Length: 282
Image (cartoon, rainbow, N blue to C red; front, side, top):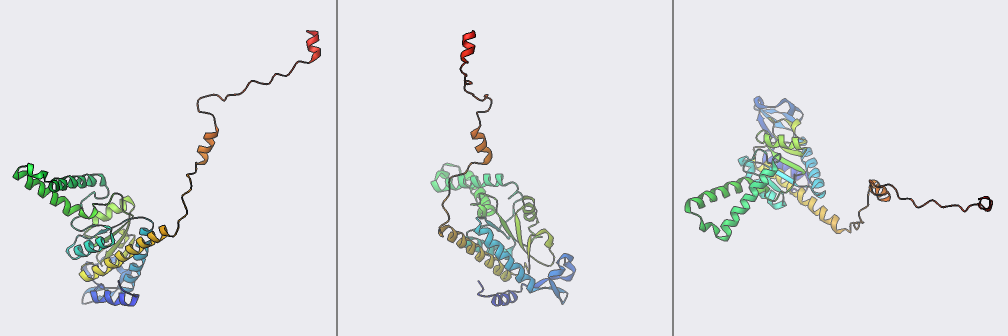
């Protein structure tokens, strides 16, 4: 992690984060983030990159401190290793092999496949797989390896993530659509050929440079660790003890009423003693 902003800027420039795509491939919506062009290649404004990165770090730290999870998505060859390493370091979920359609919108089926993976691994660990034929062992082994390759990063994800970080939104367009459909906030490293309107917090930069991707992912992973530390400090700082659960006004009102469907019970009306004159005349 860069100790200060000046070192971070220098590291990003050395990594080539400011190089965009060719001018002919640009998306006009990226114009506010482009500094100029050189040799028919767009140059990204590093000030906008730093601004987006700092905002993203703040958002990640706040989200993690509130108890939300972050999902890192990067399946291209340049990003795969960095996403896996940094996600494991900060203890968050990741998708680095292939984004399966419905990973978020059809999460129940994904969980079913993860349960199947646990069943297969149990077969191999206990040695029960030896009771199967050689052909069946090979088939089950291939099935286990395939599920593990695609879903290993989200194996412990038992709820929807509160935030998604995506590298190259053009390649991961299905992930972007699913996140928008479910209302999951998105942060993305976008190049000059991407659409920033699809992302809640874009970080303009070169999404093809391996060193630039590693720097950005490392900064966000550090923000995750910082958010977890803040969550732990908040728990250790003597949070107020939980009070007994209060009943809502409606429930209190209902508790004071008679049981529904029964008429209110009233005692016998008091009988006034008859006047002496009335008794004598009778």
